[in-house]
Image (cartoon, rainbow, N blue to C red; front, side, top):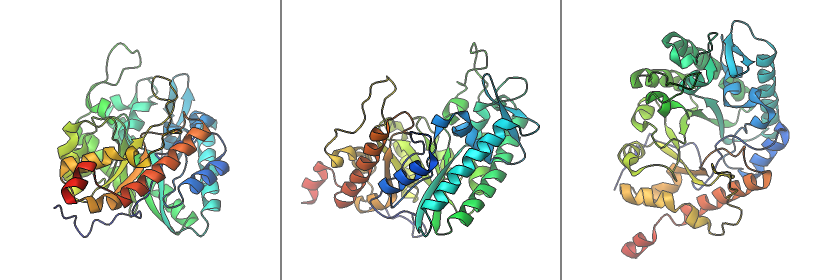
Length: 358
């Protein structure tokens, strides 16, 4: 039986669900209200990319980082010396989101998750003045990571003032990390690939951003099944947010080592809709919440971990963000995630294990 260190205390209660971050719609007040109603025990600050690039993953990073700024070009965000209307608009949208969160969470005590783009993904999605991605330049990668770390520190300090009862969970989103490490990011022309970022360097900049969160519980999110789990944990992540429906068994060993060390798991098991093919395959009609979390049970069974720890260490989530879903589909996904989390808490065992322990 695996013994989790006593110091590994998770900031969420047992048997809960939360979201990845993005949410349909464009109104911060209604979005925060909806998330809080659906996820009262572990809400998150919803991201609303339907408002445009000022409110998407990169735009939020532009608004948060300190000492650097950007503006929109034909191809996306580009670093510039001084803040213009685009950066000011991104900052305004972030402040409106925080105003809505502060109003709805007045008097709240418990875990609250906020999301921020990771340093490698930010460098992969922001351009230099030359038009090349910032990730192509070692100095730009360093400067972006430092600016992001400083901005995250200020961002979290503001959140603590606005919602003093919150136990903050900082989710660092790194969807581009695996392709940048593998040298698979396309160049601006699309005819070649950007040189791979060294793993040691990526780990160093991720660690810098994580450390800037002070006492916030750091989680790293990535839907790519090639996430370098060992490096992410070595960088300081105390939680992993993964799409378990895509995670390869080749990751069982590093995931198992992380879980044994007390790292929390935000387990993406509830499908988002529409899927990559454009087919709306959301969870609205799924009637068995317990079956929706069998991927978690199977993982735990393969790793030989103590089932009684599962619902304490695991938070159930959708597989990915829900910006592409309808409001009804997004609400259904959160309801199913919550029901699945309760089912996992009430009965963590697989059918095969029930027979053995009966």
